[in-house]
Length: 537
Image (cartoon, rainbow, N blue to C red; front, side, top):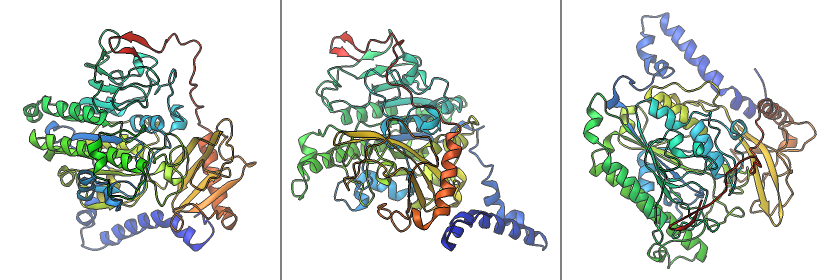
């Protein structure tokens, strides 16, 4: 057994092994008596192989996944913030809230991790996919939508994509979705839908809907949160509910990726006015209104599921894509209190956030309701978890781990997560920070800083991602059980922990894929075309 410093360290790293030993010893002891160990431990032992009944389509749940953009981890009303999010709060409180949930520091890498089940170091998408970028989720990756389609699902996507658009093969209907209504890029004006002097909103009506099929939709003047809520409701209303019970019926997978609450700070005035009595900055009030508008949309979508007879069979999933951008990267009024840093950093404020599962179907799935899941869960885990749930096999080279057993039996499935890299920029300084890793209570960051943060630490990061786990680098270590704000560097007190985690980073570096380049001189893509709404991406 590996001992890491203090007795507390020993308990952290040996807890799971001890737990397994207790189970084994208990089963053996029971076998020595007339007591039926098989009956007593059947639920626990079955959890290692259990999946949803793949032979019965009507038993597979509908899946609605809502992705929030740039949501601060201290913003939903359930955290006592004063922001009105009653629908999200109720869903979280009625369901299973993930209390130790990790994402990546940016939009594109998190979405790539969600869709592929892989860390950014294995897709090459470390940073946001920029305008005129040739980058995209590699076409050889099997996506979550691909897997669910194999499992018999109808797959629909609404909202933000941000996983590549330099060639049609990067776009949603080539990546497993039957249709897509939304925008390809990372951000835009909420009302004009313009991004850097070009329009970006379209409807791709069928699989492999590229040139000659993809339609530019004129939504100028319509607030994007309302547009995507409306379209999600249309998907639900147009779904053939009666076929769900038939032999050839397909359950529904609806991927709803709101633009909210990404900058720019824009919202219809009636949503902001409800916060006139708050002693907040104007920016915070607008942001609160944006979040309330999105929460209203979530309420309307769940009501549509109920009105159309889908709700009782729906697994509702909510996730953020990264922490709120509190000091850099399109700041819009969010808060990650009491965590340090935000978007574009590997501090906890940039790489953790809200996520939960909800819906009456949780009971049928064997997942506890009105509960919190305290164990580590990473965004890469959604793909294998849902794949096991619906009875389809995943590729062997993914980083995600199915959390189905853990969710059912309150067990830790993973001992660590790779927090990864961030590209930060503040006060004219910019560069790569990290990598970082979380293991049990410990968080190790390679380098002197995790990126831009509220303490105004401004060291310039490296010009390219540093090789992970190298000897000639400084490291900072935090005990997150006692220091969630990552203020006290305890590396000098626990050199054995530092060395252990440095070796973990070094192991990851052996299989790292370099970041995809933003520019590709050989790419013939020209950027924009002329349409009836003006220049269009």
